[in-house]
Amino acid sequence: AVVSTQSTGDEDPMKLNSFNQVDSDRIGAHREIMDSRHHSCNTHPNWDNLPSTSIIMTFYNEARSALLRSVTSVLRRSPSHLIVDIVLVDDCSDDPEVGRLLKGLSPKIKLLRNIERQGLVRSRIYGALNAAGPVLTFLDSHIECNVDWLQPLLYQLTQRPRGIVSPVIDPIKAETMEYRVASTNIKGGFTWSLHFTWVALSEEDNMKRTKESDPIVTPMIAGGLFSVEKKWFFESGSYDMNMDIWGGENFEISFKNWMCGGYLYIMPCSRVGHIFRKKHPYSFPDGNGRTYSKNTRLVAEIWMDDYKELFFKNRASARNAEVGDLTARHKLRENLQCNSFQWYLDNIYPEMEIPEHNAYTISFNNWCLDSFGKIDSAVGLYKCHNSGGNQNWIVANSKSAKTLTQGEMCLTVKDNSVVMKFCAQGNMHQQFELDEINQTFYNDYNNVCLNVINFKSRAVGVGSCNPSHGTRWVINKV
Image (cartoon, rainbow, N blue to C red; front, side):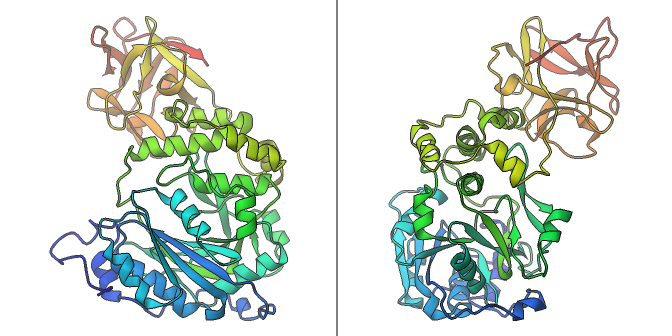
């Protein structure tokens, strides 16, 4: 049966899917959830002449109960006449039977299966090409649609066709499956390392909205859940087919829509619950980090103009990521007559802070401090190549931050060595103060300095801060 459990109950319930599968299986195909909308949503415009839509849902080794609940919530909480078809794209899951069992839920369900794994972007395009509706509504495979979730999305597209509209995403707690209510006082943003983040609405944002049900103008969408006219989706270049598996596609579609004549709205009266996981339950054939570096470099090279250098300074590993031929995507931008990234910052995201930190190389005897692009592995010396990447360091030496960073990774004291770890506010093992006179980096918490421990083996660690024994580094601005 579709609902049959995949867990034995004797193992960690989070292991297979990075959410509590025992609780998910216990909930089953359907549950009642709270209407999380503001009461003003009970008054709405005329929904009599809305366009119909295709639902596109891709999945890979998804838990049966979560996938079933996702599809069931679409069927039960959407007006039937507005759903043309539900296109399920199985991205070559290990068990093909899961998708086949879902076909029996409704004659509107179309099942497609990739013969080899393609990833989210190419699977979504495959689904869109096989969708019959004039509007495409993309959903993840671990969601629960709420009351009247679809109509506000479709209505907005009748008012302003060339754009993307997203629901408010209510979090479903991965550990307990508890459905929670998200704030409508936030919008999507990003960091310069190209990670999505939620940011508070500015005073200007709030002044533009006269009531709680008004659309939220957002610089960025999370990317998993949105509606778009099929014609505009393909005219504007759909997704970048060069992207692999997952990650970065929301930046591309967000920058492109704003810069090329579209828009992004979050619709407060549309609510969809989503299980937020702390890690990916599936593997990346080329590794998670390398895949994300490739995908985000594609975004930076095509859409960020000179601001791509800020991205590379914050994600050094992406600079040399293999991205292939960019000609077609550059031609798309030219044909769409898109605005510059500076225009996007000035007009869509003016509150985005542009950092003034500078990148440096840190060397000793013409051998540069190099992170080797690895997490939790020792850094060392490598012949200076002046190509950036793992030899470029952001040196923060202010009152608020004294760190040596590459993207979201910080140089971190670990016993007598130094390794790269994710930066964590308040982690004293990551505090390195630059002594500009002696050209040393001092960690006050451990009372040690960054030193070359063994030049022959190119080993770097921490030790004495005595100028006669410690390392005097050469620091050059890139």
